[in-house]
Amino acid sequence: MVNEFVEHLSKFPGNRWEQFLLYMEANQDMLLDRMPNGYGDEIRGIQAATELSMSSLLAFNLGYEIMGACTSVTAQDASGHMYHGRNLDFGLFLGSNSSSGPNENFQWTNTDLLRHTTVITDFVRDGNVLYSSVTYVGYVGLLTGVRKGGVTVTVNTRFDDNYDQFLKAWLHDPSDTASLLAQALRSQIENDSIGTDFETYCDEIAATRLVGPAYAIIGGPMAGQGVVLTIQPNATVPVDSWRITDPDALPATAPESEKFYVLQTNYDHWEEPPKIDDRESAAYDCMDNYIGVNGVSKESIYDMLAAMPNRNRLTTYTAVMDCAEGTVEATLQYCYENSCSPW
Picture (tube, rainbow, N blue to C red):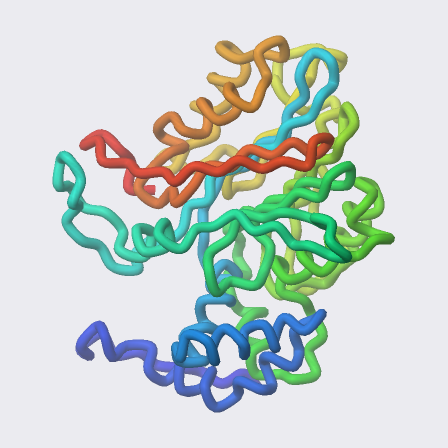
């Protein structure tokens, strides 16, 4: 039976979620010991070094399983060279404040805090860079990563009817062997028999039973190696696999031989996005009518992602990766314009 928490809105906001955090603190070893590849011990080490509460670190590392936003794209240029870009949007409704920027309009508090903890990290084995990621200090999962000649990967939140029910069950059931997506992405990119090959990596992620719904956007070093996996929780078969080489890839109106990208926000690509959060139409328009296959480059992918509404008040950073070169470039993003969307 799943335990339930009740949060009273009459409480001072700083005291809300107290029951949840107390549960995390009391059950920290059960939660940490279930994490793969010693990631739980990494969190223990972070706690020892920072003296932050373990409940806060656990909540931080579970946060993207609950709520995020984001835009991801994999695209190839006219020669078949692959690029992979993403905006990471996070912090919706987690407090707001008046901006210190030029227009002094509201900003999301946690979004601004995360910008200050954003780093590019190279993970080294035997003196060589194994893979690189863009991450937040204290977060041990992989949200944006590249392994040279192997894969690029990003993760986007998927909003479905399950929301967080499987995460709640996982938190309370030590026997539940489902994986946290960001940690699964990291453990498999570190695996030499998986992370070095695009198709193998896609197959492994698709077959992994996950705690929450998500989109895994995966790229490779070769032409046509770009896919969006639409994932439902507690399953080992994805809802959908959408590849650059598919007839319904993008541009939607282009002949199959002229498709050159797939792009994912937070809604199933075969459905219309809600009008209050339609980032994909602007991105499609930019990719189809202004960039085109002949204009695909690191710079043009960045420009599309950095333009409103894909850059919004939740956007912490924009990253662009090149699998063949094994590179990732990231830029902190701010959205101080009065016309900037809150999400």
